[in-house]
Amino acid sequence: MSNFPPNTLRRLQKLPQIPSVWEGDRRTLNDIGEIQQLSFDGGESSTPSGDCILWVDGSEGVVRSVDLVSSEMGVEAIARSLLRAMENPQGVAQPGRPQKIVVRDREIQFFLRGALQDLDINIDYVPDLPLIDELFRSFAAMNSASPPRLPAPYLELLSKVAEELWDFCPWDYLQDHQVIAVTLNQWDVGTLYISIMGMLGKEYGVLMYRSLDSLRRFRSAVIHNQIVEDLEEAFLSQDCWYLNYESRHDEDLEADDEDFDLGIYEFSEIEPIFGSVHPYEGIRPFLDEEESLAVYVTLCALAKFVEDYEEELTVFDEKDWPQIIDKIRISLPKFAQKDKSQTILVEVATQPELSKEFLALEVLEDEKEEETNSLIIDNNFVPNGSIVSLGFLPWSLREEIRQHPKKHSQTVDFKIPKNSDGLPIILLQTTRSNAQEMINTLKMEGGLNSILFNPGVDAIRDIQYELILLQTPQDSLHLVKDVESQSTEHQNAKKKWRQRLKKTGGICGLVIAMGVTGASRGTPGLTQIMGLFETESKEGEETGLGYLQLVPTFAHDFSFLDWDD
Picture 1 (cartoon, rainbow, N blue to C red):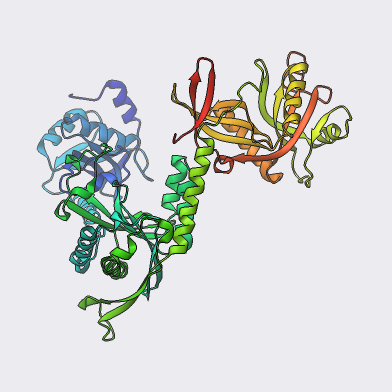
Picture 2 (cartoon, rainbow, N blue to C red):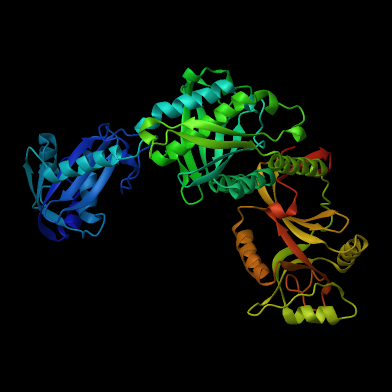
């Protein structure tokens, strides 16, 4: 490449020439570390490799462009980056051409002289580029400034107590719902509620909840939520410190193997990971000094407790888990001793009542899963050719239906909200005979108990759906419609539905109308509406159905099964 194309040159010649000197250089990222995490116009690199091209206005002291490129790219990448610096500079810089460019690489100098001829820009060589040198020193300092995972004095201490717990294997006889409380009353920490992971042989570790409310919320969310997004939100809403055990050789492990168990390895093959989870911080994979001391004392007390009471803690019937309370004195490390206090007295106690509470939640959920395991949903309630839509019923029309002697109405008394255009409804419009049959079906089953919006998936085509269901007092379920979850039209309609639903306090309605083939198709009036069923709306976890999947049972019949079936 000896020059820019003629049309590009003409475009650049129209830019104002700035009385300034620019520094330009291309440098490797190997010595900078995680520089790719910075937001540059040139994009991100997934690994700290490749080259970084910078153009800096030395007169103004501003960076005009930063690009991350592959090391294999030729000098043409320099020209592309410079073109961007002139025409589309980042930050507050204005487009323009410099009077002079200085570089510290002879090859780049000769290349740019050819590429920039006719642009009236001087290209000079200098041995040093002070502005760019300072920038790269700042990048390196930023990378080295990231906090260590643990304060240096606690590295060996926490690793040692983690090894003790690994050797004691408390997960062999303690399940994660069997909670142990450790009371410190020091360092702004009262009582920590310990949940031990590992009995399933998948993930090993210790969770130290800083509040009982956080532990309760998380366990309830995990037990009741089947949707991945909800579980992720519940996980990030925890308030706890953690110790996780991971392999030092992840690349050698078959992590996807269902039979794989990290517990077979010696501690020399294990990496203990300490950190914190908090609703405001998310996951923080490091501890400060005060946190490290609290976690160290807690784990020392836990290790001593499970060693002393292993026989009592091992029970065959979880309901008979014993109440054990002990006070354990833990020696503080010398560098943490203050006011001549060399030890701390820690109370450790099992929480059998709390554990029964969590166990009961699991049992109830298991029973609920058994009830819904072969849940048959009537998908013939809405005849073919019917119109199904989300909308609203004006308050005046609602009142007319309620007062009309020939219209069936199941109504709920509630205060009509101000600044509301109407009652959120699902409209079912079909023929007269079909509409009457649907009304009769609901009347025979005791009316309409609730309208449900429940997640589901077509297991055959692997498509995510939202199912709109009618639930009667007899717990019969009728499918109204299944809509692809990613449907923009449905999402927009659902957004308006939710806005109206908030104003009515969760009350909605089902409108059944005739006239699907007439002039009122899609917009039935009082004449066409044959029935109004007012009820409450439930969504997601409120339905109690879990995540449903559509599977064939035989030739022309389908049933919905629980997602975990």
